[in-house]
Amino acid sequence: MARDYAVPFSAGSLARIVFATGNQDMVDRAVVAVNRCAVEALPETFEAVSSLALEAMAEVSTSTSDREDVLAALATAQIDGQPLTTEERLGTVSTLLLGGLDTTRGMIIHIAYHLAIRDDVEPVLRAPDWWRGELEEFLRYETTISFMPRTVTRDTELAGTQLKAGDRIAIHFFSANRDPDRFDRPDELVFGQPRNPHVSFGIGIHRCLGQHFARIQLAIAFEELLEQATNFRLKPGTEIRRQAGIGLGVPQQLWLNFDKR
Image 1 (tube, helix red, strand yellow):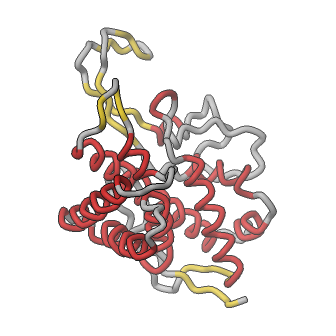
Image 2 (cartoon, one colour; image 1 turned 90 degrees about the vertical axis):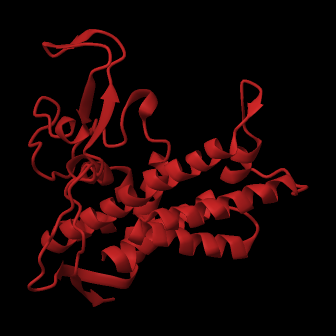
Image 3 (cartoon, helix red, strand yellow; image 1 turned 60 degrees about the vertical axis):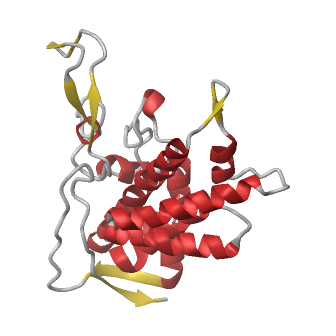
């Protein structure tokens, strides 16, 4: 499920958005390069993507049309009247890819895991517009980014704890999404909740730029999957190994059996 579906789906979708040019050859090469980043995550794989980004942004300077894609925006953007440096442009591309690769892939795997172990999940995913409501419960319960470091900017007090400017803290989104003061049955995946104030995409000025794109990807990923298959279950003898880090708990591999529709 991970390498055969979630990785190529999320990597391909992201590559087509970031490298949305009329040059189909470049888009095809970008899909391959971003997929390698998702699978290998080595410096040379990201260098290959950076080279493609430079090539694509150079193409913008020779274009006679008014383009409205991501790389064109980066190539023409200005801050305080100054154009972005090459390093700033490439840094933005890297941030877009790093922010969208593991997160969406991880949520696809999480949802597929519940699809395989709970009989009530497939009917939920087959309901029209499930992604407008029940998707939020998956996002709450399986928080893909479990925490993020932050630096305290001024002396303050938080929940009785004194913090000083310069202190480093970890913002635990996972903990916030399991807060019993906010959610009934916080440690269970519960469908049909009337409201779901989770913070899986962050909050405030740091709220995820790609949250709506992520929701669209998840909706399409399972629409396409369930069009072809049904009756999902874990392959007998499967060992679920989960990764550690900020993407806490995502299965590294997920082997599923299913029936073809």
